[in-house]
Amino acid sequence: MRFSSGELRPQGQPLTSEQLSALETGPGLVMDPVFDEIMSAETSIATLQAGYASLGNFSAYFESPTSFIGPIYDQIPCKQRFRIVSPELVEPLEALVASGANTTCAPAGETIHPLFVEAYEHMRMLVDRKDKAVVCDDGTVDRLILLR
Image 1 (cartoon, rainbow, N blue to C red):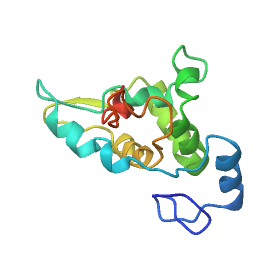
Image 2: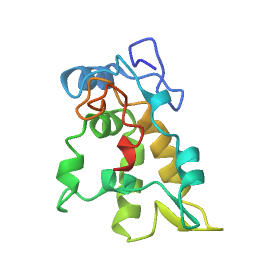
Image 3: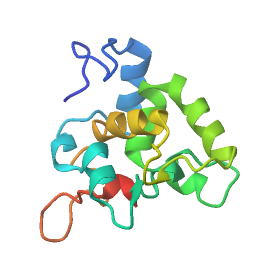
Image 4: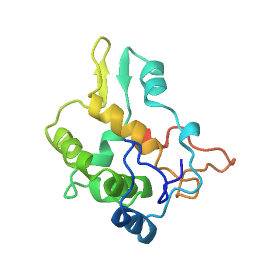
């Protein structure tokens, strides 16, 4: 999925000229998407061991900017694109992480917070092959890049 003036955000709404400009001058447009090469939330949740459903460390993308890890994740291009394309989701996700709720890992029989599943699937579409650390040394896409 390429985000250009004629294409849609994952929620089906067109990007505004301000969003396009922010993408172009910031992290860049997604020109070589790899979403189909990154593990889906459904697959991740279904394949983990010990009876737990998990999206790994995905919640770290929404840590507070004043935390140790928050500023590091804020520099990742797909997070920067997410903030531009879906700003309405960032605050609720940050609030969930700040609450200390177990948002991306759940024991068998419980579910991961649906807002994180939605955000994960959305962020998969915002990863470009040219982004740092997306492509491994062997030339394959890191399927777990959003879970680390």
